[in-house]
Length: 105
Image (tube, rainbow, N blue to C red; front, side, top):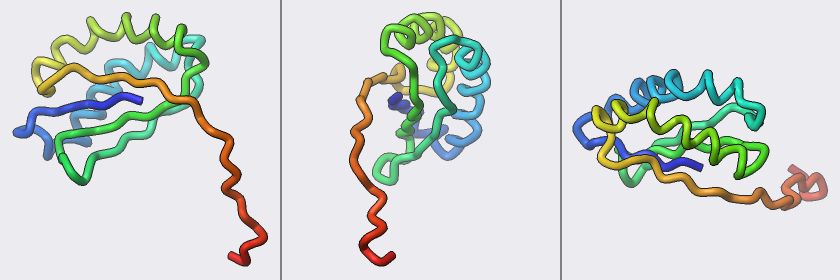
């Protein structure tokens, strides 16, 4: 999961700016053997300049290599639009059973 902090004065252009970021790093990520699926993007209700980008990856080790190669591509982007560099955290998916057919809905 990536957390992005846009500068408040450009936050209203969040969709456009996050698309620009994805256009920078998306093609190389999709070509990487560790790529495992498309990202989803979310804007915070509490802080309109904060965005989450969530995506699967085959392994942390594979992602760490890609992540390092992305930083030079993002240098100008950070300077133009962001109040801080992206924060990246790793999570494991839990196999919680959410298909409750016996509840009548």
